Length: 113
Image (cartoon, rainbow, N blue to C red):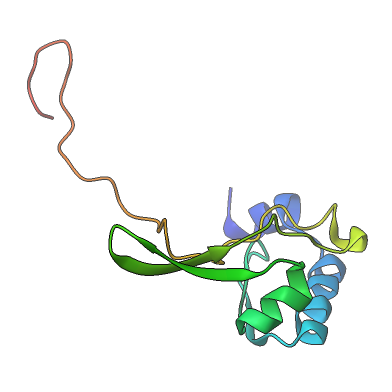
């Protein structure tokens, strides 16, 4: 399947993406970027912007001596976006995505591939 076929079959419509972008803009987010396959929309904003856009508050706290932040309540999106938005990510820095390292091992022979 080509990237174009994937986008046509699985991506949100341009109209749906437009609704999300409009919500982010009205909430005060900046630097809004839509991925080429329309699966991801990234934006920058302040804690106040997050509160307006997603009806949650960001809180600072210490975890193992490190100052971190996270949303204090569940994220909410307008009902008009409920069938469009699958997740809101990046509202915290407690858990970050990372690559799981290590060599694979063939369980039958015990050898590494």
